[in-house]
Length: 129
Image 1: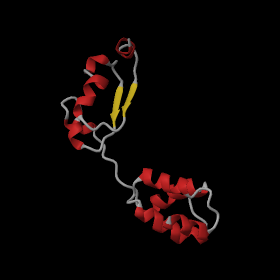
Image 2 (image 1 turned 90 degrees about the vertical axis):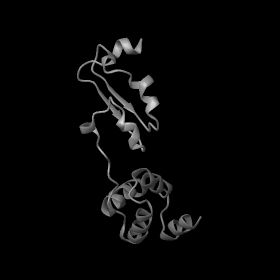
Image 3 (image 1 turned 30 degrees about the vertical axis):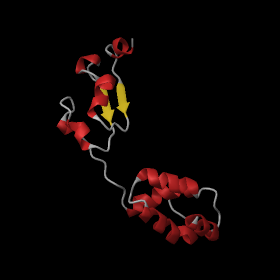
Image 4 (image 1 turned 30 degrees about the horizontal axis):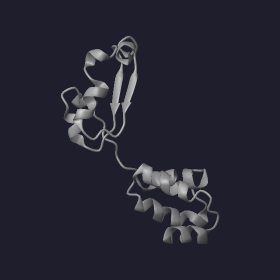
C-alpha cells in the first residue's frame, strides 16, 4: 500500500543511521518504487553502505565536524538559550566544547545538561560528577 502511494507522489525519504547495506532493500528498494523527483537521504557512519549500486557517488555529502567557534555556539544555544555564553562561563564553555570533538549531538547533550545551571560553581560541580 505504501509502495503504491509513493510511486504516485514526489517524496522525501530519510533513512537515519543505516549501518548495513541490507537495510536499504526493504526501505528504499528499487528506483521504480518512487515518483520522478523523489529523494532518498541516508545518514550513516559506515561509508561502505554508500557504495551500494543504487547510491550515486556524486550524491554523497560527507558532513564535517564543527569548528571551535561553531561548537561553542551550539553548546551555548542549548545551555544558555543564546549563541554566546556570558563572560563568566566562556572558559568553561570552551573547555566543554573542546571535549565534544566537534560532534553536534555531544554538544546538544552537554548544553542540555547545563541548561538549568546558573553559577560557575554549579558548572564545575556537574563537570566533576
